[in-house]
Length: 236
Image (cartoon, rainbow, N blue to C red; front, side, top):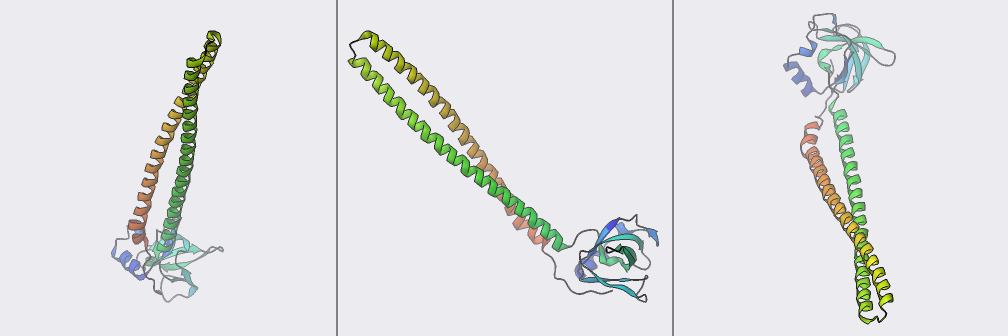
C-alpha cells in the first residue's frame, strides 16, 4: 500500500509543476495499495466521488495523516483512498498527497537524532572524565612507588656503608636488591599503564571533536533545510 500527507500551498504548487511519475497510471488502475500520507495542507476533504459535485464524507484529514491509496485517476485529478480505524474509503485530490512525511514530522525526527548525538557526546565526555581520574590515580601511585624506591635505595647504600657484619650485610643486601627489583618492575608496569591511558585520552579527545563537528553540521546545515514552511488553509 501507499501512504500520503496533506501539504502547504507552496508544496502543492511544486508538485503540480513536477511530472507526476509516481502517479503515472491509467485512469481507474489500482495503485498496488502503496502506502502514502496526507500532505502538508491544514485539512483535505474526502468526497464520495471524483469531483466537487460529490458530497463530502469527511470534513478534512489533518496534515501528516497516513492513508492507503487504492487508485489514481489522472483525468479527474482524484485518488481513491482508505483511511481511519474503520477503514472508510473516499476520493481526494491527488495534489494533496505526498510520498514523504510532512516537514514537522521530519523536523521532529531530526531533533530526535540530534538529541541522540548529544547524548553520545555526553557519554564520551563522562568516559573521558573517568579516564582522566584513572590517569591521575596511576600518576599518584607511580610517584609514591618512585619515592619508596628512592628511600629503599638510600637505605641500601647506608647499610652497605656502615655494616661490619659481612653475613648480615650480604643478607640485607640481597633483601634490598630483591625489593628494589620488585619495585622497579612495578614502576615499569605503571609507566606502561600510564602511557596506555594517555593514548586512550587522546583517542577520546578525537572522538569528542568528531562528534562536535557532526553536531555542528546538523545544526548549521540540516536544520534550515527542515524548517517547516508557513502553512495556510487550503480546501479542494
